[in-house]
Image (cartoon, rainbow, N blue to C red; front, top):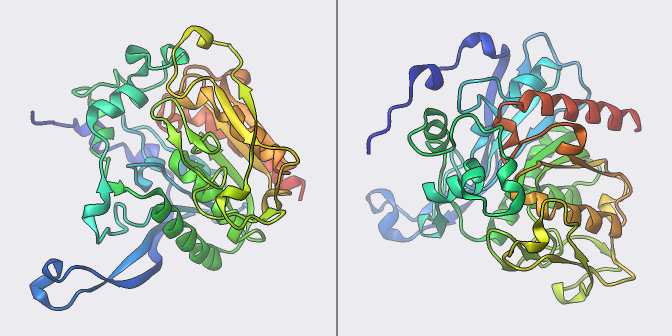
Length: 379
């Protein structure tokens, strides 16, 4: 079926956007070999891999905020997530530029404009998967609170102009979560060396990359906003099940005290039950309704101890059934400045996993900006 995206969506009005000075550059990367037959004209198997595209936006009237924002997208996405919304409204990049922040938007290594040189290691998200779990959850109802999803623009199904515009942005992504995390940690370390101290804003899959980046650069990350970060600790829930994130909130080693030499050093302890707020107790969930924390005495994540952390959870997205466990894990591991912003408790209703694209996206951005200003005032 041929898809035609209306001009009004494909070309958002300039009046919606904020004027900014723009530049782009790449950080990280190394030279690697590919199979000879994949090399252009068999001219040699060496290419660059692991590099990361970065788009820098500077407010037209100058930077007024002390620390820049680094935006990281989630699985199958690119940095376009933070620009216009799929139905042509203003995105978070423009909002934060208007507040005087320098903005850095990234495409993860092996993704989008950060070229993937090993396509055999890439996977894609089918259209039905996106509809069922992200944009039309109020129809599919794969978990109880999904029925509350009202903020996605349009029907959330293929054939709707906003959905088609969104799905057109989906790209293949790295199959290995360990490779992806290692590449992103290295690239973000290189980016921070260039930007200086910054505030991280992560979404979904990149939540783990944020924790890993803090661990590698504790003096350069001033705060982190984790929008429905990958979780819960140690295992997948809801959409799929099974052990993962062997270092708790990451797939790669973190600095614990006492030190962890292998994942086996992290002992499982209490299992948290889910508070039955939306009728979950009678709803069959993949993986069950209990969650793993560390055994006591818990090892401490020493580099997260004093970092301001905001975990943001929508009312209806699948993270609504487990983000509270990630927050509890961080607190158990010694993070002293963690806040959990559950949007419905802030009076912001009906959002899903892609809240920054939804109808009330700027209302959420205002709440995040207020938190940043408060957190930075405590320095």
